[in-house]
Image (cartoon, rainbow, N blue to C red; front, side, top):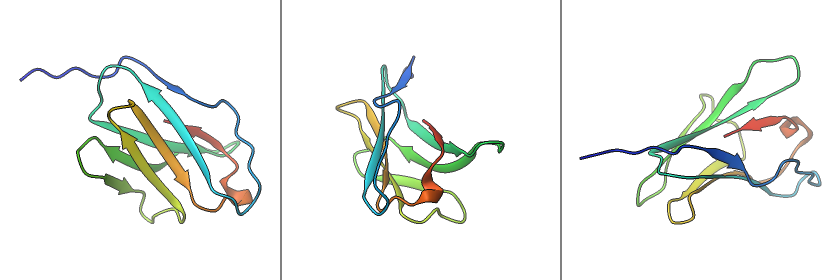
Length: 100
């Protein structure tokens, strides 16, 4: 069996502005294939922190930070080669730089 991995990944939006309390989805698209994709967030002056890991599979499989960050979930679409970070209800504390 031969494995190939994504050669690049890019955000679908560069800046996202959302009203507090509203849902928001951050998305990245990759090429090639990927067996897992991570999301991190970084506040100014701080190091990046792990948010979650999404595994490529026919069923949804997500590993969350411990403790889990409330209201954050992940989704991966193999057919669209896209990974999403879903925030169910945006708060001021969600304002950060996100990495996929």
